[in-house]
Image 1 (cartoon, rainbow, N blue to C red):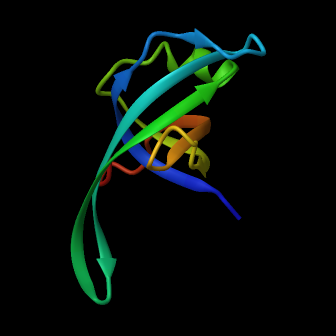
Image 2 (cartoon, helix red, strand yellow):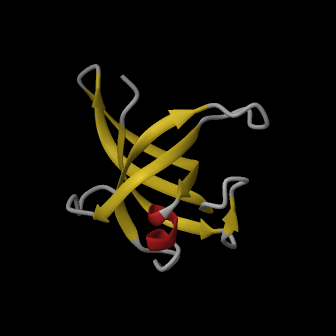
Length: 101
């Protein structure tokens, strides 16, 4: 199963573009900070993640402001041109977890 749910802040929104199939697409950079428990220890976590939204999700996301916080759901891929993972955003909603970004 490849399902991601992440509370994060939008730190960068690219200019809208279109896929070869004519769908709107938006490249995004997200930032997450939280405290997680691992092996009975608290650990501060910070990650900056590249993401993409396609279609109606891209149109909705393009109307949001840089710095706003959301809860994103989607899946991970590893495109050939990137040496890291890419979050494909399928939906997003208001962040209900105030303690984590």
